[in-house]
Image: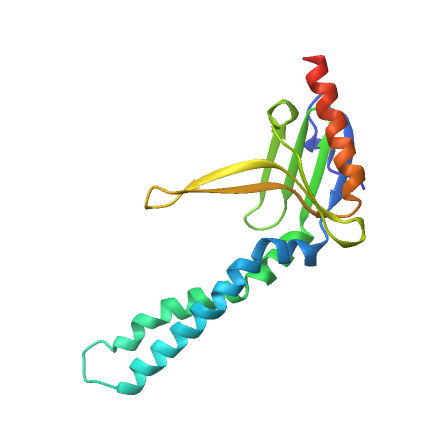
Length: 178
């Protein structure tokens, strides 16, 4: 696979690049949102329709307050489509200096992890030699003081064992050279 040469820094060598398996990517990224969305959307529609059915002579119909919740629930239900689209536009790159994830399109995003900052390599194989290689943790604080840790990396790629070996070899070379 060819990549945009501008993605590489001077002196950086391309080791591997690949794309996601879009359907597996969408499932991995959105399964929990989708499942929660079924209940959220159902309840929002139920509540809104019940309140609208009761009528009432207020200046602002109370059922209008349910519309934002219906829309949020609908968004949760279509999240797999969003992640499917993102999966089609995601490119993974492993170089001699870093691991890079580039997502094109609207809300484009690119982030890289220098190899010397990778503290773990978590390989999660799925059927047929495919799987995910996770190597970056992100902590998110909620409003109640709790923390949620999520892992990122090369999600839903083919030939996960080969890419795992390449990543570990490049990390080992980087730490030996340091």
